[in-house]
Length: 451
Image 1 (tube, rainbow, N blue to C red):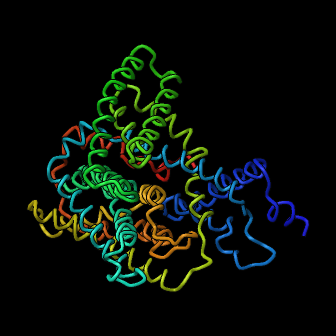
Image 2 (image 1 turned 45 degrees about the vertical axis):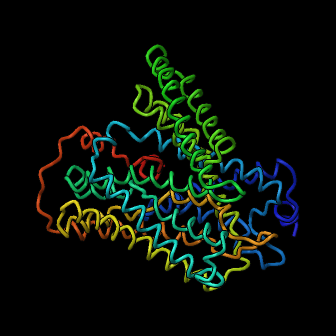
Image 3 (image 1 turned 180 degrees about the vertical axis):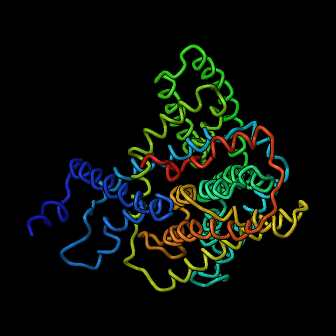
């Protein structure tokens, strides 16, 4: 078939990558809008777009291997674009994190966040070990251990966007329990990213654990120390040149520098560097302006490419029913882990059972950060010398988790708030800020009306 020979079976050079970009952007945005219309995050539609246009479902066919079937070199080029996308996502997340208001979230939100990271990670580790080739007999295998830790790390992050929209719809955004959920969700992401950085830093090589921890600590010392100096410069720029494009360009340059230094110098995940760069620039006069530029640059091109790339790079040639079983177990422990962990923290802090259930339910949603964690830690998957998966690849499970948690979170919250007594509205600056800004757009374009 002429079109097969032209488009699909002989992709060549950078021009085919240009064609790939056109198809990816069009299809991922279209399916993202469709997902949004039916009440799901756009990232779900964008990942599904990658699965549909890539070779994942068509590997066994002789004459058709997907609308896009890039070769190794072209996949490398798309991978670079996708990595820029995930860096933008985490940079925007850091910009959206208000350090002063995070401090005001208090010990309750911090405790909820810690339990919301610890319990799902332990459960994720256990369930991953159950699906290793030899089960818990592989506990002595370092590759299996890190694979299982990686699975647990994916379960740590919470996507606050869906929760915020539901709380606002129920007019419970400014209640005490709503404030706990919002504060915990922000702190939760910080801890989750830190956990991933430690796990990826410990993996591979013969470097002693204590050296790795020192490198992680040194990175944060470096990031904060240099960041405070950079923050002073950007405050000066904001004062003397407010809303100038140079500020946005310099900010993105700082983001890339932090990402490079984090991974290449300190062995910490690049997304951690991007997040820290955003955190250092949060709360200045031009933070909102910078974030708009990042969103314009990232979500216009690079972020859709990142989500679609996950689908395009998927390989279901060795798919087995056990993979679907794992995905269902992964989703179950991901949801139950948050409800139990965060709910238990709520109970410890003297909330009643109903409020504890609401806190746990509000923390179950996962979104783009879970996919970012997957992309950053995919090297931790246990593979053989030629790249075949031996352990557990949680890609499909992560997509399922985002899908099911996005649907269940609003339902469980609405059930929890049914006939809920009116509480005194919170009046702190934190709560007022969260009510106005919604934090729903932390890095999730899903919550914008401009599709």
